[in-house]
Image (cartoon, rainbow, N blue to C red; front, side):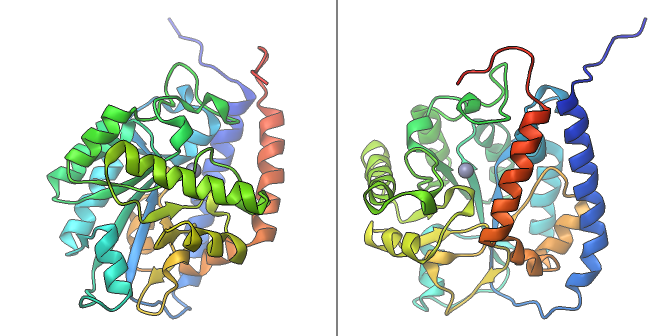
Length: 311
Ligand SMILES: [Zn+2]
């Protein structure tokens, strides 16, 4: 007896986008060998690690969820290649020239604060003696991602609660800010911008008794005005989504990060660690982000569920 499979337009759009991304990555990889690749601290950007059924996830989570088995293989790859993870403070001190700069260092980061970071990623990090930083959105702690477009249903988009974030810290990991509400920072006026940065930093410091020195810019949206406000709010590290490595002389408030996504095969991950995709930092431009917002809005239109969505 055959079981009927869901065939929503969203599923086909997801499959098309993911196939396209995998194909493009393999086509574009050789281009990276033509560019000079700089050594330095590589910051990896993850969002989710889980074993959820691809079809059950929302469109965004399908692309940002690294399967747990893949994550373990990625951490094993780092370990075999001799990489060590560093803390935010070690990263800051190394970039400032206060402690010796070490090759083969990596800073692992997780944006948004999903619960699966604790349930699926943390045990694997511990297995390899690695640490990572999670960047929760202060107002979304203990909630789920249904407030965002193309999100998950059935509780699959759960963010960590305060006790879960404490458990994450207790395991030796770290926390940084991802703002109060996850806005497009470059669209905010000066007062709103200051409040998003300042209040989230103070909120995390009060809740967990830590010194919050880092912010991950939501969606990687940052310009010189946001960078200046970030420094003024007391942060020492700001994490973008622009690919590349960081070394002495890199502006610590505009750190480069390399995103790891659901479409990264073992080969693509290994090439990313070698900097083969760093030239794609050109994606992190205002024009690219504008185009992607239009593409994603079109995808959202195509995948609109028949039932009423919350406004
Ligand atoms: Zn985010």
